[in-house]
Length: 191
Ligand code: RP5
Image 1 (cartoon, helix red, strand yellow):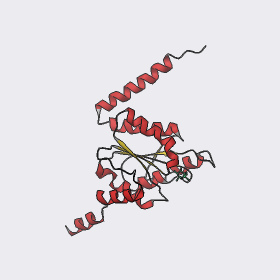
Image 2 (cartoon, rainbow, N blue to C red):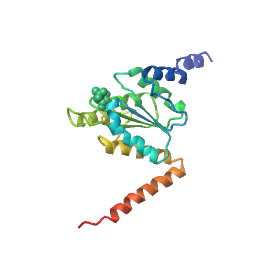
Image 3 (cartoon, protein in one colour):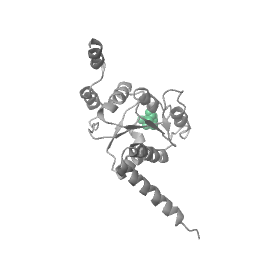
Image 4 (cartoon, rainbow, N blue to C red):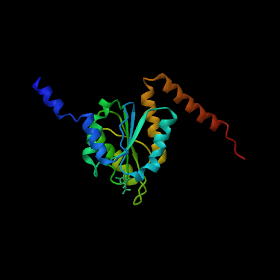
């Protein structure tokens, strides 16, 4: 009993997370109905990560998007990941560029599926981000997608696929989306 009390005292509360987020940026809002969280290391990633948010929107998946960084706001990142599951989040998408360790750090703090999206970087065109995100040592997985917008879109589609396992309506939408893509290719003619 004593141990239980000690444990819950240590657990970061939703209230504390809200406070922490408030002090970080006024745009940080936690949505009680979110199933997916889209995280990115910097606002400069948003132009790319918008594609993830828009894809989730298309499928009607409640989600929230935040900027947080593994190295610039390490406490916030760990607190967010630690409390995500208890808030009802089922999948986390984490994008970062350069020495991109956001997805790995998030994955270290939760057993929720974490999908990593490497950002295109100035120095190495995203190869640095890709390797930093994908090369997780065995034990703490990050499902890594392609560099840039394709990765952002596919991370959202993969999140939809994970959620669709227990949501027949979402599965129906995903199958319809695939059928539409197939139709476009089949109907393509070259001159
Ligand atoms: C990473 O550093 C971010 O994810 C971003 O891709 C990269 C550059 O960030 P800024 O210098 O544009 O803020 O942490």
